[in-house]
Image 1 (cartoon, rainbow over the protein chains, first blue to last red):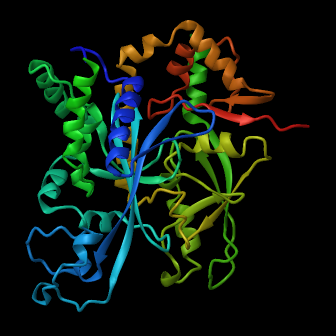
Image 2 (cartoon, helix red, strand yellow; image 1 turned 90 degrees about the horizontal axis):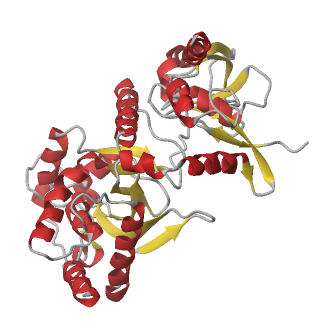
Image 3 (cartoon, rainbow over the protein chains, first blue to last red; image 1 turned 180 degrees about the vertical axis):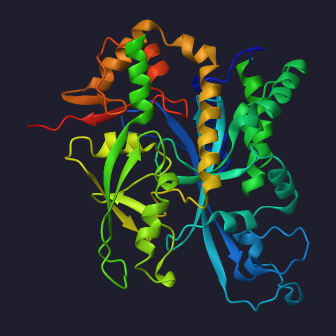
Length: 220
Length: 204
């Protein structure tokens, strides 16, 4: 990408296409969706996590424990009763949906997400907040614009939670400048999502990064 | 310029006569009278309906009250859209007053954003202003839309294939020839966006 080239919608769609190609190779579940008769589209992924009920009402222990676990790990977790104030009532399966859309106002991608129980009941902002790792919370609380709010999904028109996009440019610019300096291309979406995703429980396998640099070799 | 000043004044002081009725399935201790109010086109529902809320809560018990929400003919009303825009989109072809139903139960989680406080309304408004600012100053985006694109967009809004659409801003149907620049300067909402309603023309 050229120095002053802005991140336009075409570039966004191209980066998403590359990203999804790798996702399909490793079975990571991302797919592209469009509305009928519309050139606009977005990338989305759904996954399920187990949320142990007890940890939703923990006492003020400051242990940095991530309260949402992928299903495979949760089945092996030994419950430490001394850290919780209530006995185990059962686990809940939470469905998470992550959508990546393009904002033409800010000319950056934006991460929309929502979570619900299997019966369709949505998680409220305070439940989402509980699922966020402590170290991210401090940062989010400090910066009024680096925060999670409920917004209307631009294409679906439904309520989603959003990480505000106005600071994206700020942290992506050094990444892009550096990639030019060392003459190694990056996939904007891969780099960006690897930064914002973990804040809301979305982790990217490392192979995405390897794929991004491999794309460069293929196109040479 | 006098004509333009009139436009600005009419936009900013535009009001919609509205009748609020409590949803029939709400539990009340006695009958609730409808409440009439003139709603400012450029404001937001949750910002101007404190009196409506108080009026209906007087006949209800505390335990039957949760977050207030509004609905018109079965459609939940998005409080984060300017009032005038909601009216133009949903009720402009109906007779006045605008009949809105008030609910205190069964908040439609899939359709409406929560409005936890006045601060939330302010935050939303400021977010819109900020976004409009970002958009207006991305000159590349604006410049890429050539004059002919503007005309095409306008024509396209009016005609959706075989169907004809009504184009409305602040309850006004602007003439096709009106420059978008003028519309943007004079008919923008306080959030700095020019909200345009596209309404399918009712077939006679």
